[in-house]
Amino acid sequence: MEAKRKSAHQLAREIGNGQNTARRLTEEGLKRCKNLNASLNTFTFIAENEALEQAKRVDKMIAAGEELPLAGVPLAVKDDFCCSGLPASLGSAAFKNFVSPYSAAAVEALLEAGCVLIGKTNLDDMGMGSSTLSSPFGPSLNPWSTEYAAGSAGAAAVSSGQCLLSLESDTGGALRLGASHCGIFGLRPTPGRISRYGLSAFSSSFSQAGIAAANPEDIGVALEVLSGFDERDVSTVLCRELPQEKEKDIDPGTITIGVWDGDGDRQSSANRDLISQTGEKFRQGDFKISEISLELFQETLRAYYIVAFAEASSNLSRYDGIRFGEAAAARNLDELYEQSRRCTFGKEARRRSIFGTVLLGKDRFEPYYRQALKIRRLFQEEMARVFKQCDLLLLPVVKNLAPLIGREAGFIDQYEEDYYTAPISLAGLPALSLPAGTIENMPVGLQLVGPPLADDLILKVAAGIAEGLSIPPIAVRPGRDS
Ligand code: GLN
Image (cartoon, rainbow, N blue to C red):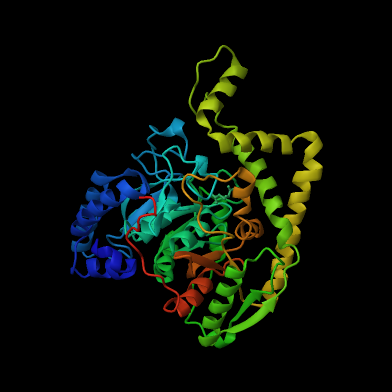
């Protein structure tokens, strides 16, 4: 696909000024997607007819003189977002045949801006994971080496050139970890910047819509399109406070990047090397660097999981087989609940439904749930202090390379993979995962974290050093065993 070599905003410009057509690019793109999907399993559904229809619509609008910031840009959408008339599995075998009657607000906004929706991308069991290994559709493979999982199928779709933008969800890190594993950029914005209407969020306070792309500028264009007040999602009321004026060009000399002075044994030497190399790039770009200490970070992963379990259990309770979820044959109400949940939930969703219910029970509410909320507040306060010492903070994203296909770790080990990403969700901060280098020929990212509403600053700063960072998108590299 020719589009692969170009950025989304360049491509939209070409289509806008008549150098190219959405129709032509979509036809080429679909071919490429189908070919790559056979080896990567990134898409749960390729929306061929709908994509061609939308491409025709875009060409017509351009011919009529309309300006579309993302004209003809091939878009992938994670399968926990609803798109009218398309399947939405939500990562559950029970919803494989569910067709959504309406579109998520974020999907509507991207289509209005001219994007061409190529298809829905794979995800873990009801979105609960950062590997795709628990998907009822089987895992998505990493285009850098098919021995490894993609982490996020949307990130793999961008990295392999199947699309130029991917609409993702990020609860405790799925988008950021996937972007890191696939060598691209992934933004989890400030909660409230993008409407979650039509996103099946398993955790009401952590799950957010985010964007993956091969460069920070494309994420910036998409964020502008996506960000705004939506009366269907009350958290977007925050967008009413956004400054109307766009942030001007930044002066690196006035921006301090904080680097963590270390977290004992946890930060691997590979991560430390990446941080010091990337810190050096910031220094060369005239940014200031300052060492920062974090006291509470190590306590936060457990707090994240306690709250995430509790919220998952209440969100999952709607799948009772009466209004939502597969209605199983049953002799009485209890059996209906039990059997319906058994066929709607995979292993991980079942685990969270049970653990979450236990954690919210009378005896555990105070010592677990309430304590976790306390840690959340204290950590938010600590991060607010940190952002008095620096403008943005550079942190690792991953503890390890992407999981190997066929060697699924135990669930506690899987939760540990969110060690660097979940705390940022807990604190409600925006973060961009950016490609920082490779380890054993696999890409590894770092995250640039900011105070609430620093999304645009994060993207501008990343763009300032992106030249020296970008790992070019790759087609597909077979694993050792293939
Ligand atoms: N791995 C994390 C969890 O399972 C995050 C998943 C996500 O971001 N979707 O809660």
